Length: 96
Image (cartoon, rainbow, N blue to C red):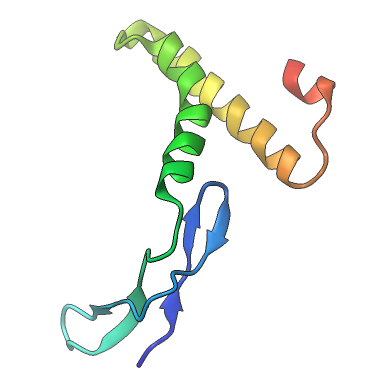
């Protein structure tokens, strides 16, 4: 049996609690890794994703002319989240 592949979920790496499902090499058919989401808090993951994306979605509104600004907002939220996870977030981070 191969290793269980961790999932990047809600801002961090997590490994499922089950045996997982095999992912196989499409040519040779041998098992490469196993994946599993058992025991993971998917509602927290969706909430995290929405919190990161919401400011960008509010700017975008489906308008092509807003894409660059929405991308910048998404990048900003991701950068703030990164800094917070590293313990480096402060008020100046939010303004940059």
